[in-house]
Image (tube, one colour):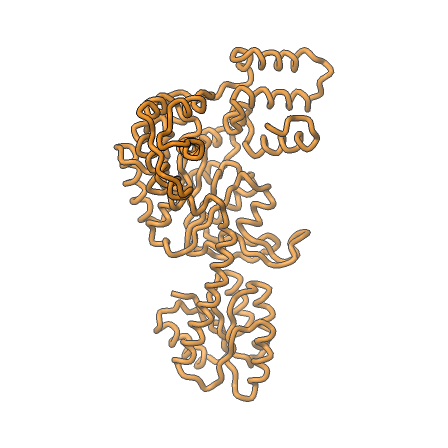
Length: 486
């Protein structure tokens, strides 16, 4: 069902066109003139607009010009009398999609609207594809079955996923990095009534506050330096579908407040605009942090947490579902064999035993990476234990503990874990020549070393966000104050 805006100052014509479109199943909104039409356009997204060319107060050409300031791609059809056909043709050069000449039949208007709607949807799909462009996007969707095992834990999670998919509530997926949170989100969308509508994902940790707001809500032309044209945000592009907000804990307090309003009222404003727009979007948020703890520390809004945590889902780390390891590894190897065009590699009997004794701090993503590495490096048909063993000797997380109970050692305890870190920390305390920035840098480097370069665990130990840690490292790398390998 498409949403059509019909504009005509003559009530009989307006009602006749609206009734014709409504009988065909379209969702029709009528406006008595250009001013009313612009007000409705500023509040909702439409698939097509059909307007009379000759109207008092604001004619069709003026309306077209104003419409382009709100939605540059909205297909506009003119209804025109025979004497103004030349004007309508000229208007098409200015961006109108089509025109029909009065008097016209119901079939004529339905054909014109059908063409306009299809054209608009093609443009919208192109925008969505560009917005959703992600090297891992299609991969995540394709390996859904490979990420789900048949053991009791994953069977329960799968059943819960299908129940969640049938609802319209906001979903909060928690779990460590690499546990398949985005894959679970895509499954929820694909099994939901919104499956034929857009699915867009946005990594909240990868963008600054200003860029994140522009990506979420869009911006008006001239809203800030470099905003040379109007741009729709993810909420507008995902209208009717699903929006995945990855790493929701990383957004700023200002953006948290704006996101809360969208969840509560389904309305938002583009950056640089004071006009509220209404959308129908299901939000799925993911986090690898303990949000209740963030709420207690007042770094995350309690009211936003409650709005997000309507349908909670926890994805377990691989060490808690170690019985699934063999099935997961087999599926990854089959997928990689097909992708690489190489014979299927088999695991030596001792490999699974070795893998089952490892705690998998990188979870399913780490397993997938190791399977890929083994597929590429193995010359024969069998992946040897001797090949895998060195890759499983890194820093391990505790076994058989829920994610919320896995503690990362605070900075004060680093001296008890390694002599190197002890020396670093002693240098921080004893050397009076160090500046505050030097102390901060050395503390962060020491924490990264203890955590084997794992940024999430290091950020947690330091009490800062992953994005903050990344920005500091980038600054120091640019200043050549730390190794480029960090």
